Length: 393
Image (cartoon, rainbow, N blue to C red; front, side, top):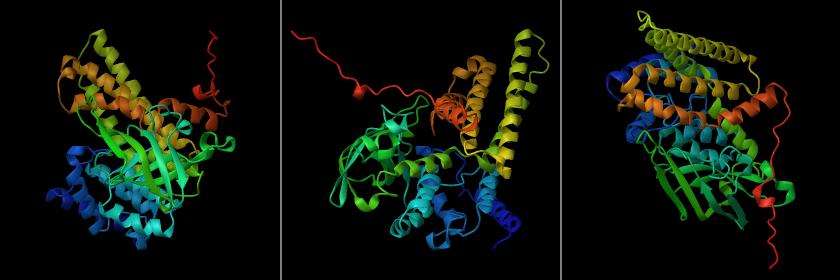
């Protein structure tokens, strides 16, 4: 097996060549911006052709067959070079890892290699208008009909759904009392070109259309598109969300760069003597201290000392910190914060990250229950179970 230092050196050389010849796609975070769609697909193919896609995936599925440590080194070097490490999180991390863990041999052979080459772009069909944070309360149904399922429902905030060939879908297959909550949910691989699938992009306040609502009207899904056992899709889905919330070396590099920028910004106001400027510096230093506490936690988790809910803690602390940093920077820019530009886009984008991958409120529940051992949050009765009695005439 290739030594980790040799692999890292090869990755750095490849990234430098790709930046120099203009083939590298700039880093864009977890969600692929529509404007970079074609460029990112071409970059994914170039990564695959040069052995930098699916680094820890088995060789028979197009990967390199190396370790997760090699993959972490790749992500870290991409973060340092400010280059996209993959086509999109929903495909290479969420769908790909789920299929590797729970897929049949046929599903692995059919989907993994095209995902690595960029031929298949994936989206995530989990959240619903009435069950965004309460994922166990989803209402989309998948009814078995011979060798197929008939799916009815609606999904929302589906990243890249407008351009995706495939989607990972959670739907309710169990209807009896024993299948309430998460116990009656199954996990499907959905062909987005299926009849009955309607995608309506959502325009964000940044002006982009990264998300969409998806309507599923009697969509026929072959039974062999079920991932994992029927009614047991919750465990598959939770593994997906754990992958989405994890941080890792790349997140640490990005955090360090972010903190360095914050420190430089507040240091630039060092000469100001008024009370307002002093208050801004104090606020900046408090955020800087929070960032270094998060950095220490990520280093500790990377060393193997993290708890099962450490990904939720990292996700909560990172997104809340980013929001507070953007609020402070917007305050420091004053009226310039109202103008169009990259800084304003970052400010407008930040609130959404407190929702993506599970809301901050849900992360606090997970931390309270799984780390602190607090009692479970009371679950209110569902509206569907409340009977309304009409007065007799």
